Image (cartoon, rainbow, N blue to C red; front, side, top):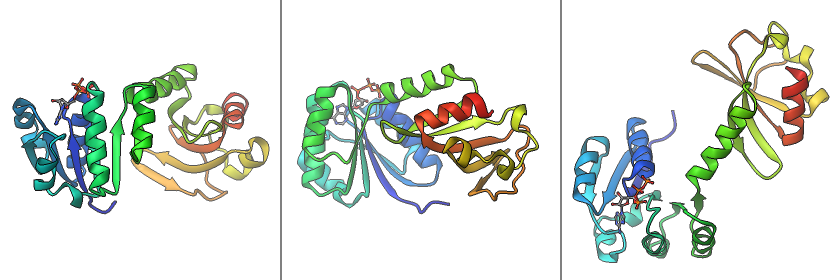
Amino acid sequence: MALKKQFAVIGLGRFGGSICKELYKMGHQVLAIDNRDHKVNEFAAFATHAVIADSTDEKALKSLGIRNFEYVIVAIGDNIQTSILTTLLLKEMNVPNVWVKAQSDYHHKVLEKIGADRIIHPEHDMGIRIAQHLHSEKIVDYIELSEEYSIVELLATTKIHNKSLVDLNIRAKYGCTILAIKRAERINVSPLPNEIIQQGDMLVVIGHKNDLERFEEEGM
Ligand code: ATP
């Protein structure tokens, strides 16, 4: 299991709220922050601590000891000015990892300039994943690594059931690499060449987008 980390989530809307609940469920220490008391009350049961604070108030952030958190997620989307000021304060306090939800390209550019460590566009990113899923029923999940490279999770089709990885020779034929095979609850990372693909297996494959598309269309 991953090491337990300390997180603070600022803004408990749908995005920040989901992050908070999920991290807490995984057993991490999560400080949930919002300036609306009903949000803080709602999250008291889904975080280690839930506090009312205005994240643009430097003193309030300092008194929460925010600089000691390894990760702070700024999940304020609607008010760009608030999001930017919060990020600026956190970076000035040397928080090592500040991940921020961005709303527009302009917002993204400013966040980049002031040192946000990761900028997330949830609707845009989710839209791409859903489109990939709709594009091909074989694609169960999709992660874009760069303009050219991706990782996809593909449901093994009957065409490749009961065949070993060495038989399929995917790397030589398509230039893609199988990173893992998911079978029921188990994940086999770096499967051996003699591993046999079974019905219901999910293949986690990395490669150039063109190669992945070719593998998905012709190889399975
Ligand atoms: P989502 O799209 O994630 O559901 P939302 O549209 O509900 O978000 P946003 O305006 O993006 O709401 O803000 C997310 C949360 O951030 C809200 O619960 C809001 O109360 C909180 N928030 C806004 N400004 C501050 C602030 N200065 N300090 C702390 N929390 C804030």
